[in-house]
Image (tube, rainbow, N blue to C red; front, side):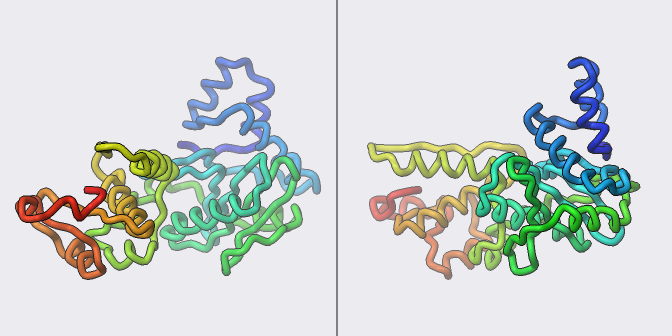
Length: 277
């Protein structure tokens, strides 16, 4: 993915014929809906209203997803002094904005550089900034312009090289304390799968069979154990059968009250004690 000027992107979308615009977007590895470009156009107009230097629109990565994780950011701009993340939404749901920016802060915090987390509502033209205590503050457009103007933009390092997917995959095995205390986030895709699984598990009947599939490092284990944690919170009685010898992380979870057994012990257990296996 290549960085782009936001004004150039919105003007290309408006003026180029469809096939040329598609080639332009493909050159920058951008996948964005027309409605989202319209939201960006409102953002650009708002930022330029005070006639600042147009350099504040340079150097953005649009719709970047962390490899393997699938976590997406609307706009990212990197700097040697601080990074900027702007999420552009058509709605103005305050709680939704806050949750999204808190998640973004978690993922971008691994870069080790100060961060400005900003949300823009195209329907109201309002900017919000995530504060250190996790609250959202309404900001004047000029405050955002000042942040963008003072950023020392740095585009020499490829964006994929900035992110290590392994940083974000909290493992119930290798990081059981972090897992138990909920110091992780599921991706939107994982959240969607979890919702589907919980809906299936809520249905009565003789049996439900659910399979989680995906390539290595996509967080299947975290999702499976997160579902079990949710079942425990709901007062259910889940059992994990591990197809191998138990590891240290699983023993740690057993100490916290979880029911986990190696498959070789399966015949020794009364499975009627558990409602989910």
